[in-house]
Image (tube, rainbow, N blue to C red; front, side, top):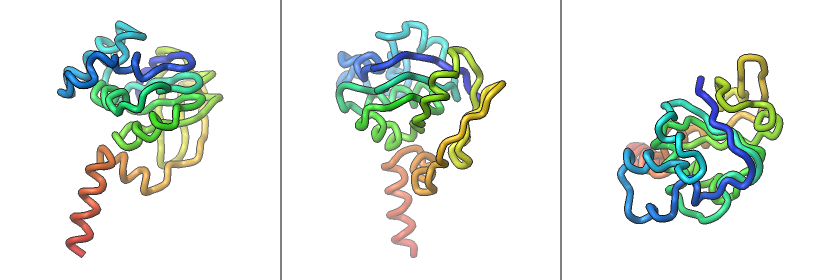
Amino acid sequence: MGKVFKYGDNVNTDVIFPGKYTYSIDEPEEMAKHAMEDLDSDFARSVEEGDIIVAGLNFGMGSSREQAAICLVYSGIKAIIAQSFARIFFRNAINNGLPAIIHSQAANEISDGDEVYVDLKKGFIKTKNKKFTFSPYPDRLLDILNSGNLINWVKKELIQRNLD
């Protein structure tokens, strides 16, 4: 279960992780301090491990910087549920261990502060009063997420292949 932070449409990567920090900050704790600061100045102080972002259309639009997804991971965000994602952000999120779920009804009906449970393997989002279903994540995608990110998954696969 995670607490929901709800945002609207067209949340840009520059407000997720301000561009002025892109090449000057790379330490996880420091990146987490600046997550969402240009959109929600309370986010970094109030987010907790396992919390969830719910958003409208085109979440993560803008530049292709991975730091936007990475800072959310470092902040403790467990998943993002949105009506839609910018394609590059969607892939950056997955590659960095952050589940991105496209679900218009859930994004519309879940409110800021709600408690939400997400099961990627079974394909559902559950609130206190509702359950929303989606296609379960494929095993390979779950393996990437469970490895923490794509690089860890590739390393694990290469090691396993060398052992076989």
